[in-house]
Length: 388
Image (cartoon, rainbow, N blue to C red; front, side):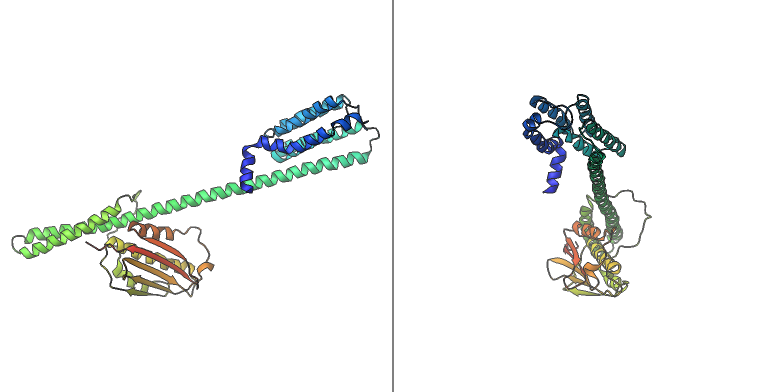
């Protein structure tokens, strides 16, 4: 609610300024007749019409809140003209203090210092025409003026501090979003490279099998038939991987070409046993023959989850990797008994983004978070796309 009020006040500064001046204007209107008919302690009396006109001239510039220095200057000049005419001090002369506060609140210190010196001069001139002026009266008035001035300075300093905090928070949020987009883009580049390797491998197999079929076509028809069947199966797998590759952008590939075969489910046992964190692998159901790209996605998800356990789980953390083939989806669950919610957050960690990117390419999803009983859990579900 307060945030909406602050936004509204920034959009309607004139209306807010008028609302602030309204109480003082009402007070001046109520005291018009009593002050006009009274004998002032300093200066000449003023008529009701003159009182209202002078009060309006003093209060009207306060609405000009976007130009506090000009507003203060106009009010000070009107007050100086009032002193030159030897007119009595009016309640509307409090507008000088309101304008002084606005200058101290909104403007640089040099303008605020000039304004308080003018206000102090005005206090001195007002007491010159007083019947029995004393130093105590000037001292008390000066204390009041300086208090208003210091209050404006403090409010302005706090406003600028809060604006700086908001600006830094917005900049940090923009930088965080930018880093997340960069991480997602980098992950897409890596996925594109890996899928490219998978498709290139399948095409290479097709070429080899086609050469073998051409060689055995006249001498061994059965061997040629098996080669053609292998070409068909491999081609369908490559086509499926290529469809998933569409839409993944590959930008600024600068890494050297790597001909090492990409890992799959057959290397999971080796990954778990060779992990720096103590871990074990559990498989439920009959392992399905999945496309190489999907096997690579599962491998990378498990690898990243074990890496997170090593980074955040603590020295004594142990992990469990579970693969469940019993349902329509391949369920990959990596749990540990580490620190869980008590683990420090990583400012530059984008592992979860990468896992979600990989699972999303195959219509899956990844969730991660602390477990109720302690530790951390990464749960991925990927529809099992049978290899062609």
